[in-house]
Length: 110
Image (cartoon, rainbow, N blue to C red; front, side):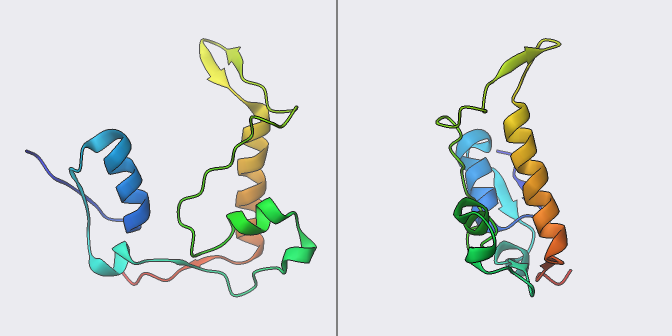
């Protein structure tokens, strides 16, 4: 059985990929990477943003699923033979924007 070493993701993210796709063939490159967390020295207080967004930026939750099924704006559509969801894309863009604003740093030392 081939084993693949992942260099840049935490154990929780690797475990998800192992469970969904790779049948346990992935391994973290080093223990420090496996335990790596995002460092957000300027994480905003929950009162300054929506609760779902604040929870999504929690460094102690490396894997988090957001259920958008109940959001009226969230609708899948076919675009050029691919399924797209512009609402979910906006949520991802918002999360990336917030991560950049809090000057995110990765704690792992390569």
